[in-house]
Each structure stands twice: as structure tokens, then as C-alpha cells.
Image (cartoon, rainbow, N blue to C red; front, side, top):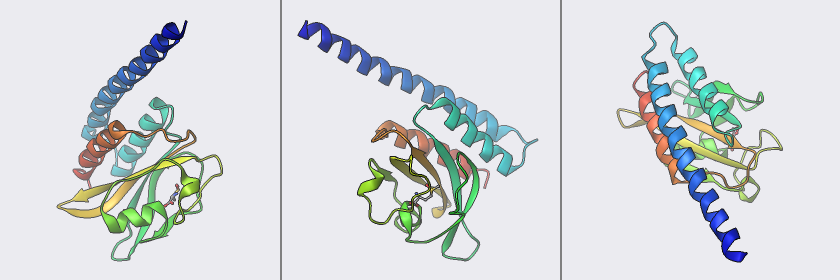
Length: 172
Ligand code: SME
């Protein structure tokens, strides 16, 4: 009985991982196709990417882009999908996004309640991941994803979103 349950758990674990890897691979192709479509504006392309991510990955519940606002040390909200947010401008250093603007590093937050320097957009959000976008080595913006599931992000999300950011950087 115990073995059976263990076997079932292992099966579920590997199945879920395998399934997710396949989804990420499929989405990479979709994102490349979106970015090749010259009939769409940059913002339409970015919005399409948000839609594709939010629709296909069950634990991506708010997906958006922030970009450096001209010469100012602040981020400005770009295309996004999910609940509207009041945080359309975020000063560098403030919140998870503002910290990534300064650190140039990925920021994975398994539990937003455990963060001091965090800007809450919605009470349903449990976790967040922010990956910077570089153009010629300069941090020009980021993709920000909120999840209503606690601790859902893995290395695989980071690698996948780094891919997305590298592709997006080419159209900026
Ligand atoms: N939680 C972010 C703010 C942006 S919202 O998630 C849309 C932060 O702490 O920077």
C-alpha cells in the first residue's frame, strides 16, 4: 500500500515535470513566431507574449513588462495581462521589481509575505518572479510574474523566462 502510494507520487512528479518541459518548449516556438510578426507593433507583440504565458501556464496569474522610464531611475509599466495595478511607476530599489532594476539579477520570491521590500498588487498573490531584460549589457526592463500558488517557480521557469527576455530584447 505504502509502495503503491509512493509509486503514484513519483509518477505524478515526473509526469508533471515532463508535461511542463513540453509546454515550455512549445511556448518558446510560439514566442519566436509572435516576435517575427512585423504586422504587429512592439506593444502588441509584448501583450501577445503576456497572453500566451498567462493562458498556458496555470500558475502564471499576472504577467507583465516593466521598462526603464527614459532617463529616470524608475520603471514604467508596459503591456500586461491580469488584474489592473496602481503601480504603473516603480522607483528603482522599491519592491521586487525596483530591486531587480538595481541588482541586474533574477529575483524569485517563493512567499511574498516573507519579503519586507515588496509592493503588493493583489491579496491573492502568493509568489513572484522577476527576470531582467538586457540590451547591449544594459538592464532596460523586466518581465514580472505573480502567482496565486505558493512557491511554484523552479530553475526551469528561470531558464524559460531568460529565453523569453533574450528574445524580447531583440525587438526593443
Ligand atoms: N510586486 C511587485 C510590484 C508589481 S506588481 O506585482 C504588478 C514588486 O514588489 O515590485
